[in-house]
Each structure stands twice: as C-alpha cells, then as structure tokens.
Amino acid sequence: MNLQKLRLGQLKPADGATTLGDLNFPKVKWLSAFDGSNGATTTTDSSNSNLSLTIQGSSEISTAQSKFGGSSLHVTNSNPEGVYAAGAGSTINLTGDFTLEYWYRRVQVTLADNMILGPIYGAPNTTNISSGGGQPYVGLIVGYYYGSTSTSQSTLYASSNGSSWNVASDVTLGTGSLGTVGQWVHMALTRSGTTWNYYVDGTRTYTATLGSDTLSHNSGYVLLGKSWVNVSNAEGYYDDFRITQGLARYTGASFTVPTTAHLTSAGDVNKHIVVNSDADGVAVGTGGINQARVAKAWVNFNGTSTVAIRSSYNVSSITDNGTGDYTANLSTALSDTNGSAVAMTGYIDHTWGVPMFKDVSGSNPLTTTQFRVGTVAPETSSVTYYDQEQVSILIFGN
Image 1 (tube, one colour):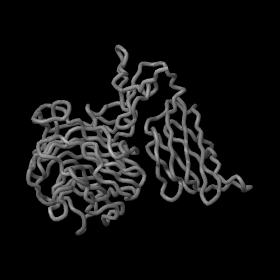
Image 2: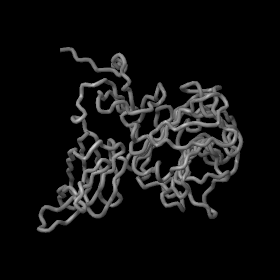
Image 3: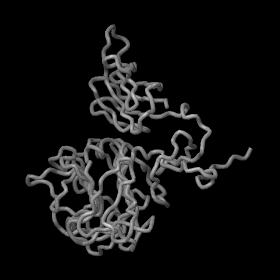
Image 4: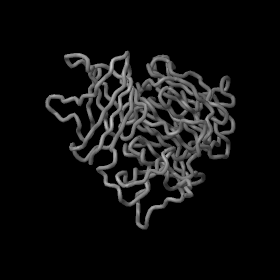
C-alpha cells in the first residue's frame, strides 16, 4: 500500500460549499483587514467581538500599499495616530495564552525615541500615553524604540501589577523586530503557558519564560500605531491585525507565515475535516459528520494557585469558584443543555481528586455557556474539595 501525506492544497470544498474557516475563530477577539476605499477614516472588526474601532489623527485607509485585500492602515508621522478600541480587560483579556500578530511595512527611515511599531494593551485613549508620574502602567507594549537600548531591535514592556514593569522591562525582541523599510514583514508575539515567543517573518527571534500573569488593564483601550508619550508616530502601514485569546498559534522555532488574509469565520464547525491547526485550523466540507459526534469544547488547565489554561478549544476562560471548584466558560454556546460532559483530574501532594459535577442550588452544572465541576478526595467520609494540578474537561452536545 502506497500512503501519501495529504497536503492542504489537495483538499478543496465541493461545488457550492462555503465552509472554509478558522477552527479557532471563536478565540479571535480583534481582526482587522483594513479593507476599504482610499482615504477612508473608518474601519471594522471582523471578529465576533464586533469592536467599535476609531481611526485617529491623520491615519487613514490607503490603497497605496497592502499585503492582502488591496488596502491597509496608513499611520503618518504625527500624533495622535493609529486605530484603537475599548475592551482591554473585558472583551480582550490577556490572561493565559494569546497571540498578537500583524503585517507591518515600515516607511520611517530614521526612528525617534518613544516610537512604537506595534500594539499597546491596557492604555488610556489620550495623546500623551506614559507610565509613572501618577499615570498607571499599561499592560503591554510591543515594538517600542529607544535609541540608547534598541538601535537595531524593538523592545517589549509588560506589567501585571499596574505599577511597574514587573513582567518585562526593556526586553529586546531580536533582529528584524523594527521591520524593514519598504517591505511587508509579519510580526507575532505569543504566550504559551509561561513561555513568550516573538517571531519576525515566521522565524523566532526571542523566547523567554516571563510568566502567565494576567496583564494589567488599568485603562481599557487597545491601540495600534500609537507612539509613547506625545512624540510623532513612526510612519508605516499595518495590515491583517489579529488578537487571538486563549491560544498561542505559534510555539516552535519557526512557522510558515500566512499567504492569504486571515479567515473571518469558523466555517461549519459541525461538518468539517481538520486539515491544519498551526496558524488557521481549516475546516473543509459540506457534511457527513453528525454534529452530535463532534466534541463541542475541551480544556486542560492547572487548578492550583492562579488557574491557568494549558490548552483548549471553545473555552474562553476558567472561573475559580473556590478550592477545587471550577467553571469552564464556553466561547461559543451550545444550542441546549442536554449534552454530556466528562472530567478527569490528576493529583497534587499525593491527594487524588475525583471530579464531581457541581449542582448549585438544584441547577444543571452544564448550561449552554458553561460547565461547573468540583474535585473531591475519595478517601474522606465527607465531601472535601482539593485544588488539582491536572484538570481536563470534554463536552459533547448540540
């Protein structure tokens, strides 16, 4: 028997099929292709968040340059600039794994101190953004430039306490992280567990263990193309900006950068063949798989101390209700509460935990949007809950 490895390009939708999609699309919290007519000053978010986006200053949609779709966001050398959205800490909550990625075409030849060639998370929507001196620290700055420390590389700053750069301070992101004048470059920052990676055109230029703390969001905005303090911005073009929450799409030493614009739906997730889950897990198909046979959600998380998701599908977060008591919150809801859930746990300090569905005030522990489970010790005569290092949940349903 001659078995050949199946290639993505060999699978095509059947005639009339419209089920191409990103299986991880429910985790996308901001997706902007910056498509539009030349000179437009409005743009949209194609994620399910449907964020209200504001283009400020003299920034605009431009057809002069684009990576995909015929247009991009042009940020000029003035202040304030770029695009922003409210929702840091709520719609967009950088806790656990995440991926920030975008295409950038640098125009600015000579950079000035405090220019930023990337996103800012948890910042105020003001002309003069800074930290200290009475102003709260933002959660994340990607692509910061300061000549004395980053002549050839951009830097990373991150805070979880809102009062210092306790997660990352002046961390250089590697060769190419300032972009290349006149060329489109794919930039990506990921966090997987406690490991942070930065990629330039698919090559990892930085990796370190920086922790999994929830990033500060004292101020509730996410900005792209905005400078620090009140200096002029670095002129350039941005395209296909995407924030994925709860998933590090890239974790290895390298990956193949997207060759098309990011997909803007999950496709028909009930009727698909999983082809590739590296960058965009692709759904292809027109039927043939009964939706009741497809797992609607799963999650593996550490239930001790600060609860942290290791990996998941269709689970946006885990709520820590107390010792050994957890709620898995679904990104996309089930159609009814007649599904089935399975849970299993590992051990901590040699105490085995047995999963027990949490019946709260006579209610069903499985709702359309969440599932609650507790972990108890089997050797005790009374019900005693214990936190567990390994907790896994698998949910089936309609």
